[in-house]
Image (cartoon, rainbow, N blue to C red; front, side, top):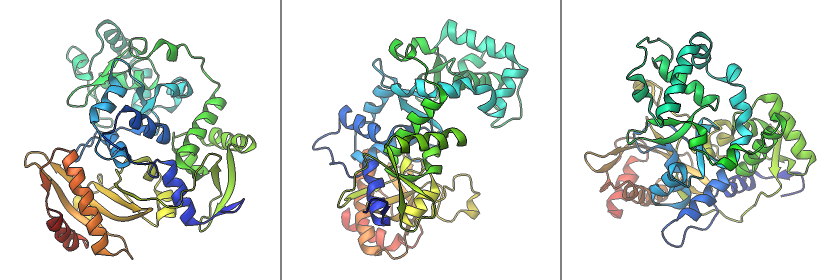
Length: 405
């Protein structure tokens, strides 16, 4: 690595180290300190409702720590001494409480930036918004269903056919007037007022100017990515183009970011001042489709030569690799991809498909993947791993699972 250029292999190792994949594995059972370490690396956890395998926010911690008690994250997110809060970060996310002031610009811009259905309900049905907020203030924490029980029955064809009450709640959430007090067993959000959920020290912290907030969030993204192009620094917290671009320039001037050339990249890149270049990365991990390592698919392709598209919303006959496909990281490369489903009724981890990347040895890849699948199934309290049903890695993986079993 020279002063102004790095190789692609170096960029991969820098990126993986920044995301926590070069950190030592916990010596014993992972505890809250390990969870905090990962959160300090990646900055936030994306939330998603798809539960064919497990809830998305649990997976990145597993990928970096191995089997950890999921209640650790539950306590940090929703316990009496919570350290995280829900808001729109990358998408719906769990974020450290310290980031709340830096996201108030988004709350303040709800009238222009929130989704169309939310904005419409605020403009066209302010009485519903006010009624919903009053319900939360008087009776919270409440789920949308609990509020809807006595709400107007008018429905709209927008989006997922949410009721006016649900859209009003989402508007209040986006604008920061309500927040998530917790989640039900069915993963429904329980809404309450911020003053009853978030610590006073957080709510009383001064609101930074938007430019200062953008700079803070770009700095967090840059540290989490290690080396990245401008679009990825902006995408991490879904920042506005002009604000992110100015923040990048200011961080370069401050010495936090250094412009570099990455071999094979057409885009200019920026290296974080604290980025670490390990000699080797010995990771072996399944990567969730919602993991920050692969959020920005163009960067994933440039770093790993791995073209990745999530196919959840693709009609089944048109899917190439499967419904819920996870890349498999081995060493510093994404060497395979595997479609997974937790069959909780049968107690097994199903593998609808498994595929090896071009140029990778199927036998070696299958051996490493079989060990990881067995470990993952155990963490999910599943008794075993079913043989893969299709894919060019299926024969070798079937043999490796049989040997491992």
